[in-house]
Length: 377
Image (cartoon, rainbow, N blue to C red; front, top):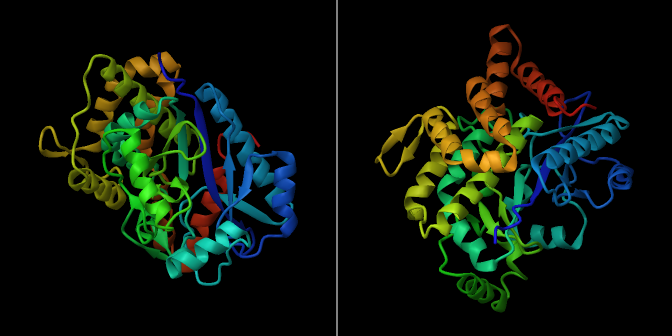
């Protein structure tokens, strides 16, 4: 029987002061409460006080997921505006420093701060997670093993973190550089079954290292709370429609791999040595310098690879009614991701005579506006 392939999207935003454009280190205590009153169960605190997380309910289709995400962005922005703040959907802030930031005073976050030390205090980064409903435990593991190959392709399409502390880090996703300092991150190994996966998790649990599998912060994982396969590698997309496209592609890839499985065919497995190389290329270059096609044994332009993915998932996009959203990947490639646009705005401002801070402030202003494009608020 076909899995449900339901959708759930989570996004994390940074809160900025509209006047200074800097991170809002201490948002008013009542702000989160007001957000939660307007969207019960769908808006949550994050590790740092300057962050806020939203999560859609379980959605049957992409249109519902898009509408929910648009409503959540509008809700956060509306409440933030009352306090002269604004959310930005970017995985790093263009110039803010991480040292003054304070973590949220909750048991879970206090424990993380104690256990992880300085790397935890650097977590002024945001991501997007996409849950796809797959009820069968072993199928969830099998599809996780196979879809790992495509995760760098999704990362490249989402990048929004080129700056860190006012510097162009020459990486389209500097967020991953910060994230990689934590334990239990990166690409998971392949597992033969859900039983083997659970056995390995239990080793860490029984040793007192983690409480449960929610402390596995891999690029993709079986969710601890839901019967879903949770994709976590991507930056948060500044534009709503870009986020929807990444979610659509991920969902279609999973269904494509499930269809192959019905024919006793699997995507050729590759070692993490190779997949991690594409992960690095996506992190470093984004769309610009291609990824390795391991079947051909050479670097292929990203646009060509995306055409192959669109063709591979054509049947699935038609099944889900999201062919237009998948095709929108071509538009992202044509105009560039948020990371490309941020760097271009910064360089153009410098060429026009702006100081470094003024150029970075223009990037923040663009992020504030772009986060609300297509939201309808």
